[in-house]
Length: 80
Image (cartoon, rainbow, N blue to C red; front, side, top):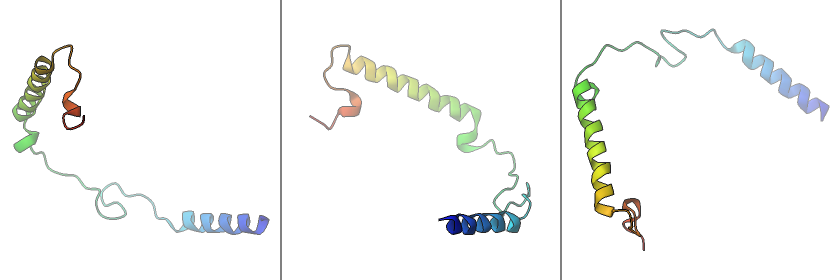
């Protein structure tokens, strides 16, 4: 049992020694990079506010539709 622990510790040590230092601009797979500012499409603030408003109206609409005494809920629509 002690031999297995020593072998595991050796592999762990070799793994740590073989790793290079982290690079903030390239990363180990080249996926860590800066991206440009994008204020179009869904990232546009007015679109974000429109989606938020639609969600609020939808929640209020579901609440009014179901009422306070409903036995079924909108997330249970297909179940009996």
